[in-house]
Image 1 (cartoon, rainbow, N blue to C red):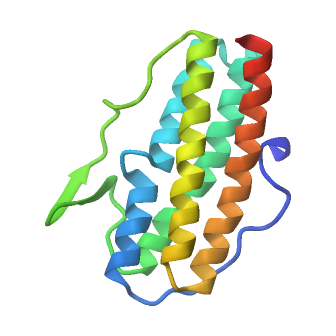
Image 2 (cartoon, helix red, strand yellow):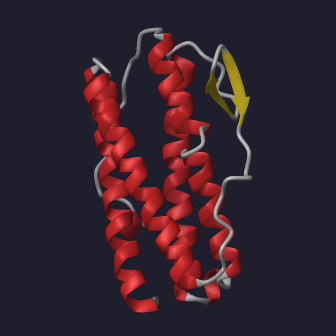
Image 3 (cartoon, rainbow, N blue to C red):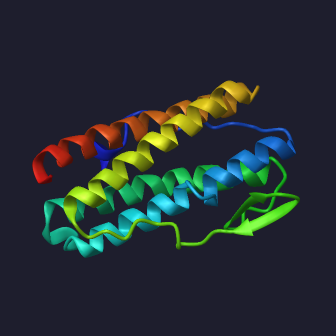
Amino acid sequence: MEEYSVKLPYPEISLPRNAAWAGAMLNNFAGLNSELGAVTSYTYRSITQGGDSSELGKCMMELAKVEMRHLERFGLCAKALGTDPRYWYPRGAGFAYWSPCPLNYSQKPAELLTASIREEKAAIEKYNGQINAIADKGLQMLLARIVLDEELHLRILEDLFGKYA
C-alpha cells in the first residue's frame, strides 16, 4: 500500500472545541464529496474491475485503503472538535445522513477513471480551501498531509487514464 500513500506520517494534533471546524471535518468525513464516498467508490470500482485479479481493480482497492485512513483522521478530528462523527454532514440548521446515491457507478475504465480524477481534484481543492480558512496549525498540517496523498492519487489515476482510456 505504500506506493499509494506519501511516506510521511500524519501529524498528531490536539484540537479545541470548535463547531465550525467540526462541521468542515464532518463534511470531509461523510459529506457529498467525502472520504466515505471515496472509500465506497473505490471499493465498488475495484470489485467491478476484477479486484486483485486486475491491475485496475487492485489499484482501486489500494486507493480505498488510503482513503479509509483519511476517513478515520477526519472522524477523530470531528469528535475532538466536539461533534458526533456519524455518517452525516451539516445541512441547513441540522444534518443530512450520507447516501451512496450521488456516487458514479460507471464500470467502463475511461469513465470510472475520469470520475476518480474529478473527485480527487475536488478533494484537493476543498482541503486547500480549508487550510486557508481554518486558523489551527495542527489541523492545517493534517489537511496538507492528506492533500499530499490526494495529489499522489491524482498522478496515479492520470497515468492509468493514459493506459486504459
